[in-house]
Length: 361
Ligand code: SF4
Image (cartoon, rainbow, N blue to C red; front, side, top):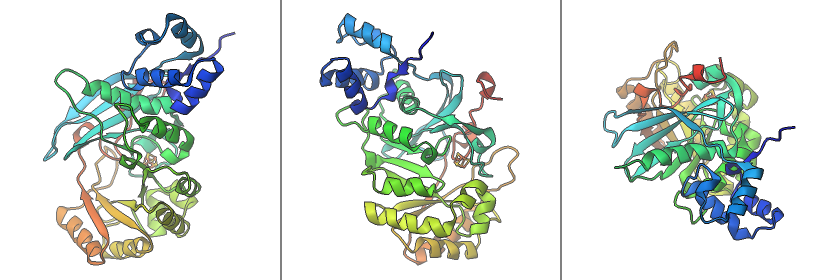
């Protein structure tokens, strides 16, 4: 009978410490192993030369290390972007394919991580939604994306480090909350070279109400972004049919208000402006009504065109008029330019191009 060994990168430091105790090893061993996994990004136990041979052998009998394999690396420099946007197509051990993106910004380098291979929610503007449900990623597969990006950054001539993380890649993170939170814990473990403060990690959701309510009291310091795209219930349902029907705006708003009050942190409302759909002054007024009830900021983003999708981006004049209407009311608003469109790395464009290499059809 074959037993499946656990991927050791799935374990947070706390979980690994418990496993070490079961193996009659001291707690500091867990830290030592974690440093090999996440500071040195070891791909095998043999690389962990500060551990005895006997312990390495016992680890090999109990765990595996299965980093994602880089199937493809694309990069593109666009407009005023301070560096290239880079996208990795990664193959997971079961053949599932995911994408992860590195986005440069002034003084920062943001990793956009995937939380699921595919997505069941079928938002009408999103390429990932066309893939269908796929599966949840394990914590190790999530952290493995950051490791893969750090491997790429460690190439000769590169000295940069990921400074921010956004869960805006493939999938809905709050349909995979436990694994996402375990990954956040590992990514933010203090004292590691790769450690990123939880305040620089953003979980972006379509608005999964029960999970937002849990997050509000979880003690996590991560930031929350909610994809709104319309403050009219019917219109939102036409854009995000499954999520908007299941979690209507009238129920979402009080939960967001509670979250913002409880955490003292503003919620980012993400609003993708779509020509002729959600870009009128009426839409702006409805958005103001929705957003005025709690501590939030609004992020207006471009629509990134996807082949065979009927949506169009708005003109810059229209975008600015919409923004100015929001600003008049004192709301905090940012206009975010998307980068990576030419390599299909921008918001809503991730569809693991090259799935034909994987187990999906
Ligand atoms: S926008 Fe997010 S939730 Fe909607 S289909 Fe795409 S990945 Fe899923």
